[in-house]
Length: 382
Image 1 (spheres, rainbow, N blue to C red):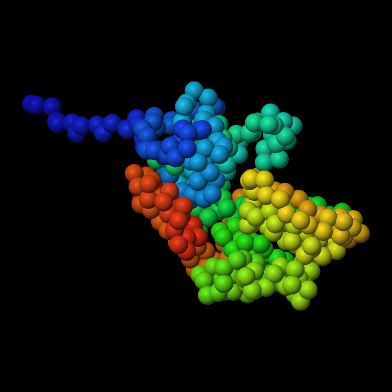
Image 2 (cartoon, one colour):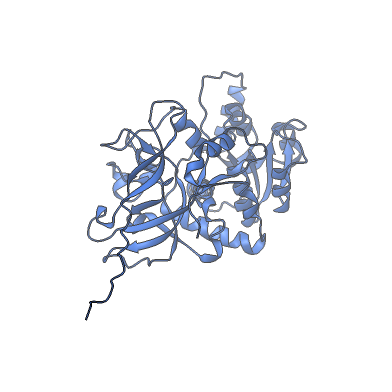
């Protein structure tokens, strides 16, 4: 009797596609092949293998491709980019109890360095000169077919949010800014901001308006573009006000609708920072979240600004990156937004690009897509 025919065993792929740059070389983004990560890359059987579904791109990716910053991990001459992740778990190590295959997750970005803050889980507040950020500096990112990570750096996403979860990482910029303002103002014993301003109506500005409206604040968003526009409509759908600075300056509006207890600045324009300082109420907090380059010089009423800050107990604080708690708060706010403003978040996902191989289209949209709010890569289907 002949032995039964055995079906050929399917071999697990050992290589995967990824988008990478050669740090320091402008416009070097390219599709590469690299070894698929394995669970044993994480100690004590605590590895989690994630299949990447979507990755958002933003100004950081554009600047890294322009060779403005970014460094490759040790042993590599390239850096896999992408820090706004969303994926589904495919496999977990024996020591993982927090997640199961099939769970949806978003990964945090920064990894611990060597300062005391890194050692207590506050790597977003590191004092190290060199920091580790996936997709940005010294650690590979998420614009790849798979990644492996430790459960401490993964945030579980409810299935009801999977269609918008790629927005979570930019949402954390807002969450950290708001949290920092409240943490600072614990010195006031009682601080209940009522009026807030958001400078800029890009992705961060839109999400800031949403988060502040969810907290019941009277919100005004300042942006250069005149109405009608998609961004202005989205802002007004939350009950916030939209002001074009081509028609009304920040300081003119402050006279009639301010001053503001809390201001989140997200324009990338340094002159706006100094205008915002003058629009701040007594005991107010100005949170700066945008990066400004160059050496622009402007004339400002320095004495008056200094006097108002001292006599008004005002605060200006910078914020960068985010901790796990800000990702978790972002999930809660996104769930509230789906209940309060159904379909609002999904309207931000304006420009999808299917497949890593279409990276040229992805970066072209990032550079000049008219009306783009969030450009993202659909790395894989469900």
